[in-house]
Length: 344
Ligand SMILES: NC(=O)c1ccc[n+]([C@@H]2O[C@H](COP(=O)([O-])OP(=O)(O)OC[C@H]3O[C@@H](n4cnc5c(N)ncnc54)[C@H](OP(=O)(O)O)[C@@H]3O)[C@@H](O)[C@H]2O)c1
Image (cartoon, rainbow, N blue to C red; front, side, top):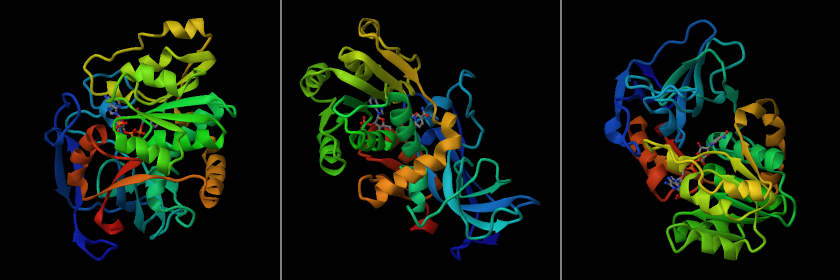
């Protein structure tokens, strides 16, 4: 057993998938195992996790299908990103005490050979933000909007999943681009948060009233950009209002990830009539430009123009499954993270 950098004797807690989930995953689908913390070999480093990233897309890859690039099968370590601190290093580029982030699985300690690892400068933003607004969520919002949608001042941008990790960043960046920004989310409290805290022009609760009628009122000039995080019926109602030569950015389809059979868009006919574009997107295409985007985002953060909202669950690896379920069904706003003891 090793003494952790926080001074506590501890073991490595790891989360494994027990069975393929039905519907939204829950604690019974996972299993926590404890083992001795590994010893880094030559060219490797040992990292203690401070934060576990809770990502909606995990549900998409926990299915009995080889259609997707990644797959988590029963018995596998659950796929996920962590942010933490180097405890011990035999790697020339990393030293004990460095803050890092990487896709190293849901566990409290990880050994890495440095592949895919990023060093985190925590003087600009806190470590947690490197998994959220300053990490993949923020970069997704930035590149999807700025490079793929290119919203113009005065145009109307509708973002669904607006209170989530990507959506909350996308709304703020759309506002910085001068667009009129409308968010769609699941409760009045989340709507109030979007307009009062993040500066969205309007927010619509999709559980309340008729979504299409509410969108028609909020976007009388039709919608130039639909930033789609959730797909399903919410995307469908928005498609009916796409503007001439509008863009539908397919960022994610959270509503469909737990479904046995996924539902594609029904109202696609409007894309033809309105000469609109349905645009696929994967943030990893922009990996060479992350540093450039972060420079610009850091300027906005410093100037008080951009927030990196996060929703922290204090716990340990065993609390990840409940947090994941809550991500789909709960009151979360911004990036959901499990905060582990060393960060508390
Ligand atoms: N293309 C890329 O490169 C890329 C990169 C990162 C993420 N993504 C995708 O972007 C999307 C958003 O990711 P995120 O990390 O920001 O997740 P998130 O929005 O923080 O969390 C998921 C949210 O989805 C909403 N949701 C869940 N079930 C729903 C349903 N049945 N109908 C409508 N909304 C539902 C909930 O918000 P409400 O309370 O508002 O319903 C929930 O909080 C995901 O689909 C993810 O896979 C894509």
